[in-house]
Length: 443
Image (tube, rainbow, N blue to C red; front, side, top):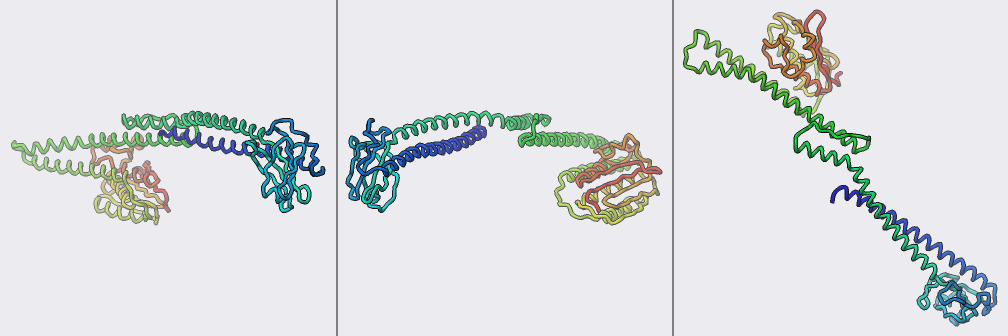
């Protein structure tokens, strides 16, 4: 059974329960009202009887209708169950006498109402004490009441059936309208699964739960589309970057493997080129691996002393870049994050600054309030390159003759975003470039 059918069925069942409950309540309220009218009539007749001598109930008259009409039938009974007929009951039938009736005549019980059947006729009877040793029964037919209740019952059944049918139809219509966003969502999902096209979107209107679901689905599709685009771009860029060193490496190896005689020193130069090209490819692949690990980072964040991380990174940079002088101003600062990724980002900033610094130049490193700033005294970054320095594989015209993969600063930005922060590059006063890594939650 479809969800739409189940929703319509639930709606119909809820309405059916409400209609049936209301029908039962209406039926019993009307029944009590009609029977209450008969009871009041019998009480009135009982009061009239109590004002007359026994055996003289002439004010009832002789029954003119057949048995079962609206005529009141009185009957006197003594303590032994002997019946005294009045004029009103002389041409009628006897009312049943039982122990409860004789108990009233003996004064052992008070007046009471009861339902009886005489010759197949449904009667309402009131039995009450009349005098010592005597009781009176007055009865009235419930035929009209039962007939009215029968009509009301049939009418309520028709109303309940019609209400349930209307509820089922309305349930189907409402479920169709309510589930329209779900159908659109299902269609879009099936289309994405079938075609792989992530550009499809669902029209969203309203602010209800289904509209929010559709909006969330559109957001998810947008994120998946951007992720897919970034992956394709990464593969394309990586392929482009690897093509040049691979081509050069293949050429050099083919030359070295050939049997022709090489000029003096040429073999050594080719071997040096092969080693450099392998190192360049290793750096590129390591950068790609770092980017992939950063995107899949699942380590739990912890408190990290940013000043200590920067201090260790500076010591390594001093060993790797002895031609550059690193000066530090590291204030105690604690952030929430993953130590290994933060260390990688700081190391990349230091490596980039050292690469652009002339021999003997200073690289200034500072830490305070969850920020790491690295300033070099190199040629600086052209204004047109500033917005792109953190893009993957981006290399300015001046950088294309230098070693590097174009991934180091992209990794820095990835780490910053993962920690809820940012990294910015700006021209420093007096020349050079200042890069600032800000991590949220720092103190």
